[in-house]
Length: 216
Image 1 (cartoon, rainbow, N blue to C red):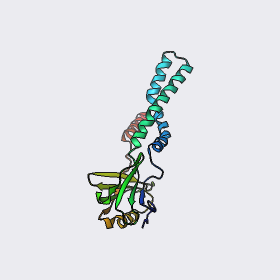
Image 2 (cartoon, rainbow, N blue to C red):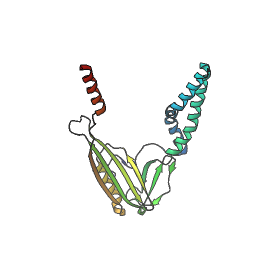
Image 3 (tube, rainbow, N blue to C red):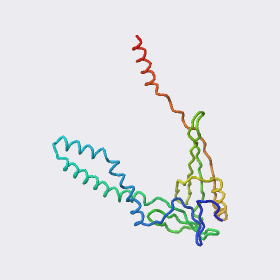
């Protein structure tokens, strides 16, 4: 029944895959290790202030390097678990079981799967396709994004989908999968035009004034 690349049908379930890969606390911690390396770079300004203060205080270069290394290491060791915790609730996929006519569903997050819920818990599924089109004379191509909203009994889940296919095809596939269970599937498309960059009026007027004064 799965007729869209984002829907993958297995022997026990049909999965709406947002991000491929295993889930679990250990795996979430491991996959957060790499991105956590950017945290010391993001906190570079406070570290730079420490370096400037030490240089002005007359500290030796070797001492400065050691202190900077310790600060960066502490930022990494603190930022790693913080990043892993913030990513723990990210949804990797939505599983519908059994594969043919689903009777239950669950969200699989980076930290592991949630409990199975009756499919009746899912009231509506909304796909929002946003298209930002170029203005006249703009050489940049149009940009499309696709978002999924699961309207659950007692809450909502808003998820960004990897875009690269046909939104209508995905909507039809979800309708075929969930329609028999009474779940409403909808698709809305929102189009807008990219803002035309405004000329820097201050720079233009300043340049004109300078040229005029030079001619005098």
